[in-house]
Image (cartoon, rainbow, N blue to C red):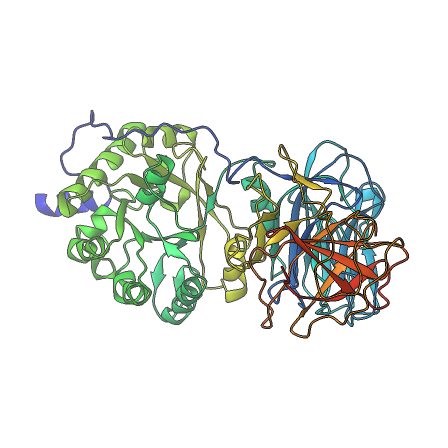
Length: 600
């Protein structure tokens, strides 16, 4: 009879194995200051006259029916209709889209479905969706899904427009960042991003929270939570193996890497290198179906999970065969999984007195350590029920205390700077059986849909790298400079033309102009077409050459000058400091199409 009472008391969480109430955690984490997720404090300044970032036409950022544009700007002086993004040359077949500032504090969008005709949309001037004040950083975001444009300012929806432009023309025009249609932004730009999807509002807000010019919370980590993985899905917390496999297949195909709470903890301490696309996959309660169904699927993808175990379930005192016991949990741990505490009994911890709550924390920790040989660093509050007092008490025994669960439709993320011992500091996204693939994908939009990203952190040189993986290198034009280091593009060489033309630079001013005779020689045959947009035809502009396959020729930065009254172009090879000349037939002042050869 006494034995029956003991078992019953254990089942109700009234009794626990022996422990010491004076036990303290072996490791106490000091919350670091908020780090910047952006990789540096550099950015680009544009002069408002001809400065821009120029990206050659690329299939990853051209011709689409969905897109998100995101840019940080700090305006020095308002330029009406100044370009922010644009693949737009005002010629038939070269119009794709143009995003620009308008109405002193608004944003407008021009879309073309055929390269010739356009439709223009603009945010309501009264809503002030653009740059409201000079000298302040502002994050401007536009999402487009083929039927709707949504305008965001600093991560918050500001306005929207319906559109009949269901796709954007795949124009050959280069991408201009900070310019477009010969009108240029006057001020600074930073952290430029393009996504091949219309990002969910949660992802736009996430960008603002991470950015150094925004809330500066540091990198955020998606942490998803499951319970049971089995069929049939008779309740919201049951996911079928088929649906779970779809989720895992998506994460694998998008290049995500599973990490554990301890990895996150070590990252905060500078002892772990975070992969580019991390995710923590949590399972609560210790259901047997996780071992039977989720574990084999995750093994196929090389994924590891994290299990929050209720000790009395693992002990066999409660739960019965529906839950994993210590041998199964040990196998998961040996496969790289992390086992964390979910209490001795699956009970709302706020129903316990402080003394009994401490008993739950200590006993479950010792129980896991005794059976698995590793001391857990995380405690997960059942039902996410906690408060600031009980979360602080949790910190007396664990380094990470999990207290917040968000809906997948409105996901919340755990940031590097979050306080792991604060109430609702650490956040998980609860996956239910209504979480279809659209909702699931939206959770990871910030990581998975990126097709162009220019962090602008180099601080030197005439190019900036695309960190999205698509190699869309951006080149600075004259009028664009680094925040603290203006760039210099070499002027034309003051030399006699040595190429096979019938003219020389007679006055040796580095330009064949009205004082010289224009060459009439045909251009070489093995050449590649380069399109350039001019802001001022008397200015030099940088451009690049491509090979016959369309790939950019490395180190092929040149300077081109077109002179009024003469259809001649001088080309300076900045790498070899040599010049050549080409003849351009009937090119308008705004557009120059030439056949170009690397001819040192």
